[in-house]
Image (cartoon, rainbow, N blue to C red; front, side, top):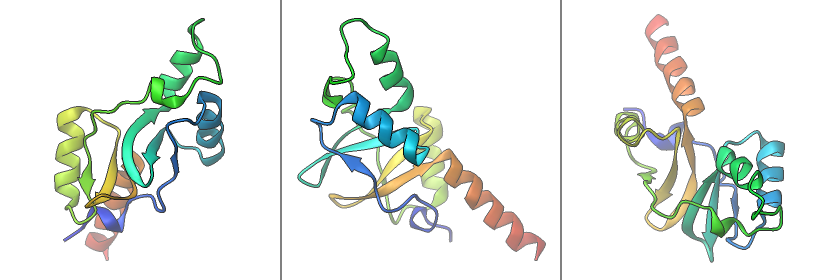
Length: 130
């Protein structure tokens, strides 16, 4: 059985809610990420997507120094590290998300994204063709 933990991005890259939009965008550009997890004292507090930061920075009332907690999504859908790929894919499809924070209890483990889905599919197909 293929599990989320076998394909997720690890370790989790996180920032504090006080991180600025510019800091978040810089991390995303450097790491080639589209999502960034927001944690406070190790607890998951939110997620921000690159397009939301870019949209916020186009607004005259938002500045690069604006804290990310002003725009982060706080209503989170997460997937357990021990979940099957099918469970994760159903959540992604149900909510139309391109990625999910991966947790084990209260501990953030990483992100599971569309790219990880492709890696999993390659793994499955390679095993079938072997």
